[in-house]
Image 1 (cartoon, rainbow, N blue to C red):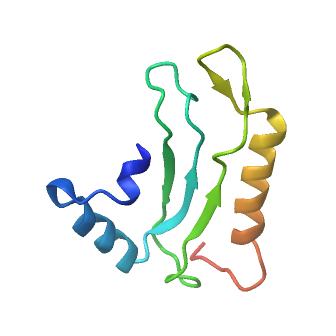
Image 2: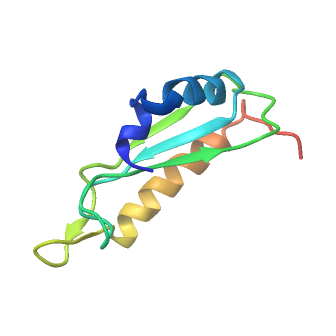
Length: 104
């Protein structure tokens, strides 16, 4: 989603976000850098939505990856393998810590 999805209040978006978070469905949000997608230059974010959380139901992990990646052309950025590993390792370490358990 566009980064505006984290703060926009148009068309009831703020209410939708509030309900998702209050329901404990948002597991993680990753803020991505601009120029990552060929079709748009705006920064984007990934929302990981998860049902069945028993622990950390009221917790959401935020990962700031806005400064990651390298320019591959004048107009386009690409996340490196190291960047992707850093993001995924951060998320999995948080999820798999001893005090986080989901319904299996």
